Length: 331
Image (cartoon, rainbow, N blue to C red):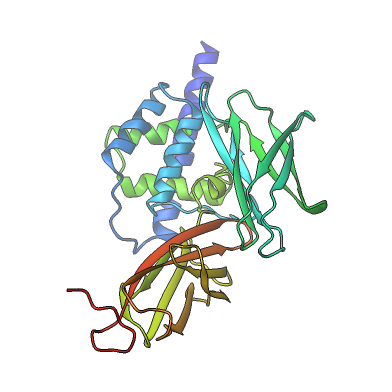
């Protein structure tokens, strides 16, 4: 009887704590926040977690989805940017390893040796782009050891900088947070109340979402290339390269541009760095002497920020006008 009374008092106390948190957040921090809507499919899965039909890891992944949609925010992302959550039984995640050798146009492969927390070694042979960029993925399964993984890299008998990533176990969520989830499922609190409560708990580090920085934050680059698709010989072609990730434009990314024809003859090469808006612009004149017929050119754009890399292909045609010297007109 006493034990049951104690449990009841604990439950009541925890509910009061949660109510206080929500009240504090609403009144002090987000009084003028706009209306917030949680997607129905996420609310349904939050209810499943509250009903003990899903794990704490599933709930954290749902908070990660809310992070993707901009409804909640994580903090100190750089601190834990190499942290990954151990996958569920039967599943595998892939940790991306990327870097630069520093030897431009030296395309001999890189050897990676990954040492897990138990001292087991895995070796990978990685292709290298002419821009000196290399990248691969390392699989982590549900039975992989938890802890620090060390990545050694070697290129042409030279040791490259050592890197690390970390694998952590399924997070443990305080049991009383299920009360908040149940209130959301029963429409006893609004979507806004739930989001602001979760944000408060994250800010106070009661819920640890540090690994979301590496899981959801893009380390992967998005590269776009814009330019004219048809250019007359003797005139200028201009290309605008834009580099971004989930955090926005990438400042200081290295850009390597190579212009070829279908015979793999290199016609032009450029190297530059993106500005604070994530842009790199280049222009060049197309020779009157090299193009006497319609020809398609291939532009390979290699981009790296030192961690991730991306290659983009842009194609365009060069043409001449009938009546111009050395122009082969088609009937």
